[in-house]
Length: 322
Picture (cartoon, rainbow, N blue to C red):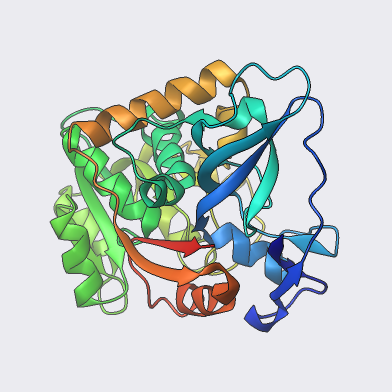
């Protein structure tokens, strides 16, 4: 089969379209023939070496397709099933052997491109809003990168739950996109002080929680948006890793809480994974969350997708098509 591989870390040019041998699925695995592959910032972290991987390596964590073969002791899925996964792969390939327990059966009404665009991002929003901090109607929250793939889903879902969202975005166009998706207070961070806007919107009361996938550029000032005993949820590093934190800062700013969660730990068991997916599919079926696949690229042109993502030229989700 064909797959995208890296032999050294670096820029998008490090991505190579190659012939790769895919062995039969091992015990507990299923082979998935991909129809659509999702692109996420974590893919760029692995490509650059920010998140180290053993080289040579494939990339990609989410995809949707059809089960083509199963190994021994697999009863979670059968050949011919439409499935998707987040946290398997490597997904930048025409097919992959994936732990069968990580495969989620797809409802008929969910397309392959929607599934590939929503699994990692949608399940991330599920654990952020429903588990890491369970938001309640009437609360106000700050969500950075509100016009990104995760951000647009989060704005819609939070709005559906009656939550007021303050969301940062890098341009007027992205701010309006966030607003159209349920962000009540979009803030253009290139010209507006988001801490000041939080103080104005909350009349000085600040916030119970901040969700930050941006990292270095926003982390320190996000702490200033939290009320006493508020929770800082750092779940990404799009602008780089934040500087090491002196824990005394959390005390000085109001006995704050800090967490660095991952999707894997919130969906470690199959029941947890399926329960999260069921809740995601439920809000999608209700029309509360619509998946915006705004950019598609041929799988072999994954480098172009990475360039667009890192240049902040994308909104919503990017999908690669084998």
